Image 1 (cartoon, rainbow, N blue to C red):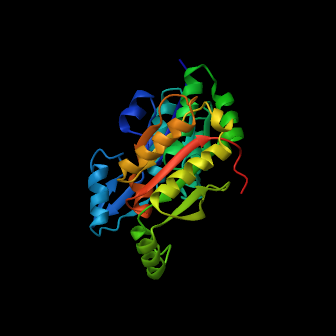
Image 2 (image 1 turned 60 degrees about the horizontal axis):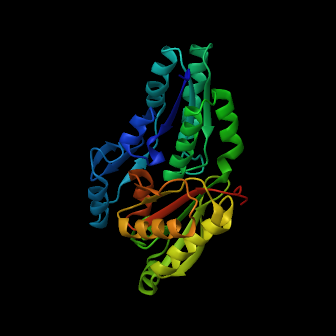
Length: 295
């Protein structure tokens, strides 16, 4: 058994049962909705369908990152048990949680000088972050050591592709990312923005497509273009969605048709409360391994 523990944050958007099964302790972000503070506990307290229904009815949640005390609570019991840590952190391009984790890690290294505590800025989010965590756990379970895994993640994290589209512009308008006029015109014309994650871990608009069918086709074309081996891609593929399972299944079905050598079925998860607070309902995200993100 490995003498180290892999940890992450709730923003990896993986099911709680999955994290328990893979022995992955995690730290929770927070969100506030209707005047109440909640932990991002992966839909266990407030089911995702309820969360997105409340947004659709006008709720405007806000989010906050993991604080230093929470990182102490995550890391210190592991170090006290005589184990080292590889912490995979949510993208610094979207949150300050990586910097906060580094503050906690610096203090804990001084307290436990015999232990190793690595903190990695994954430059990843949602189930793309989750796919990176999953891959690290697969390599750990095959016998990879702590230093080997840390080096592998730093070398390969920018090969993790994230592509997102949204069919509902309401939350983009509420958050000020597009004007009310642009939202009205976009909705009338059925415009669906396509975004991806750039090399600095930030969500970046890439295209605007008209109609759901067109954007579903285009997001799978991005996988054809960038995935390792193109249509011969043999890695895993994850999807996440915000209250639009039918759209996610349509993307998964097309991926399954185009990539016959895929490693297992496409894993579909819910976009969690943190990213979902900004996208609202109607977003689908596709994740796979491919060529390094260059811009």
